[in-house]
Length: 421
Image 1 (cartoon, rainbow, N blue to C red):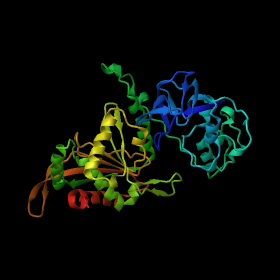
Image 2: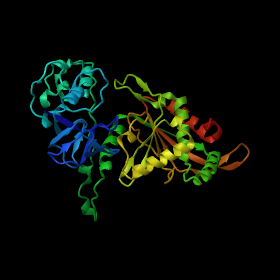
Image 3: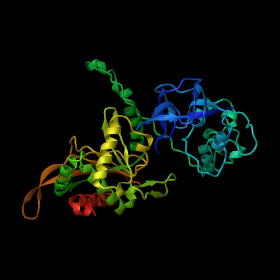
Image 4: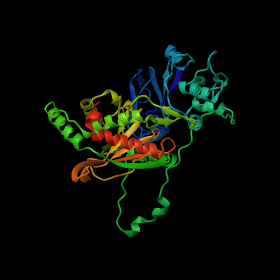
């Protein structure tokens, strides 16, 4: 018999903590591998957590609305599925899944005191602990695990690492979200007030947005694109699509144009390496699209935009937008974006400064299009102009590249023939 930790899953590349929502099983209840045990949430999506093994739910640790770090135990499952557990925790050469980081502090609080391993050979360890040991150049077979049956956690590995290890890739702690409490004073003294609780998405997003704003040097490049012909063509396609029960949106054309611009300027489709001395250039094009919901802003991801046509993209956009508003996005729906588009065109405004969605290099803000007089060399003519606002990480993108990117994007949107090539 062993106690296996059920941990807070990592639902996105930048996720460091999540919120526990509700238990779906009772203590002492038997579970099978794949049974839903509880629900958790990140700043982007709610997710059901399944049991990794067959056994009995022995201990429940998490409480509703409790915030836990990625990888921290939510519960323990007692299981005697030895063959499965050996495959899960041994040091085989097969690729291992990546549960997220468990801090040493959390591990010390949530699991029993260290016990010596009960078997010879490779020490039992969670897969990410082995990866962390490789990063820190620590021999995992010299570590005594603090988990059940000597299971080695990430915290055990980091405790065993030499304090002076120069090659360790140590995450930079996120800055605390600043509060204005000290400056608010007694607001009731000036008139009647009402206190409104922030939604869970609002609260978690606040930390992520503050982290991005304070760690990324932001600059915003503003430009406009003439979409007169493009919008006329879109209306033709939309009229035909309505007969089939679908719609063709301007955002679908915009995503295609963004991909073309990213291919022409690959640095914009990159991220800083963990060492911050190199770039990771991405050869895939998964675009995040900000969606306004009743509970806050979420960013589902449209995958492989370069391989899809306008009609298919329009369907994908309608699908993820509906699921976002209904709270039915999965973890995979919000992972892996290389670039994000935030459109306020349906609301209004002439320009804004969107915050880069780390670890992406840039984000495109789109405001409401409007008809403006434009000089054609002989006279002023009415043209439909679309405002574009590109916020970017100045460590990766300089002003010249940003201007070239928005200019390229404007030319594509202004010539629908080039866009559809």
